Length: 162
Image (cartoon, rainbow, N blue to C red; front, side, top):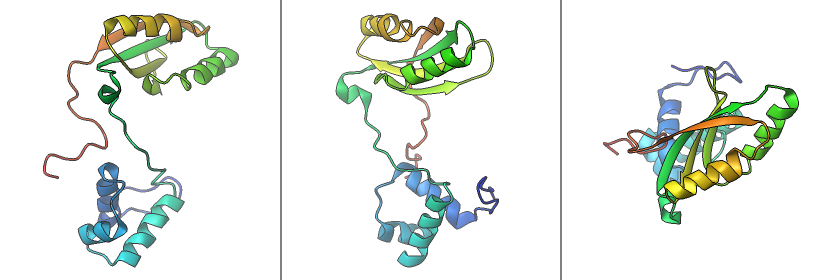
C-alpha cells in the first residue's frame, strides 16, 4: 500500500484500482468506474473527490497524438546550461515552458541539466527547432539528441489486458 505525501493516509486496494483505471480512462463515467471497483456510485464519487482533494489525482488532461499533427519524429534532447545562476535557470524554465513541440521536460542530475521529449515533422525540422528555439535560449550551452525509434511503454497507456 502506498502512502500519500499530503495526508500520510494509506491508499487501499480500491483507491489504487481507481487510480489505475483513471490513469488511462479519465473520461470514464462515475457509474462505469463504480462497476469496475465494486462500490456504489456515491462511494466511488466520494473516493475520487477525496483523492482529488488530497492532490493524489492532480488533474485530467487530453493526450494528443503528435503524429496526428504531422509531428512523426520524436527525440529525447539532453540540455546543459552554461551556468546555474538563479536568473539563467529561471529564464530557461520560462522559455522551455512555452515551446509547443516540447512534450515533456525534466530536471535531472548527472552530466546534463534537463531532458526533454520533443516531437517534430522530420530531421530537418528537428535541427531547425533545436537551433532556433532551444539553442536560442540564452542559458543553454549545448544539446544532444537521440531519435526515438519505438515507444515500448508510456504512462497512461492501457495495459495489454484492458
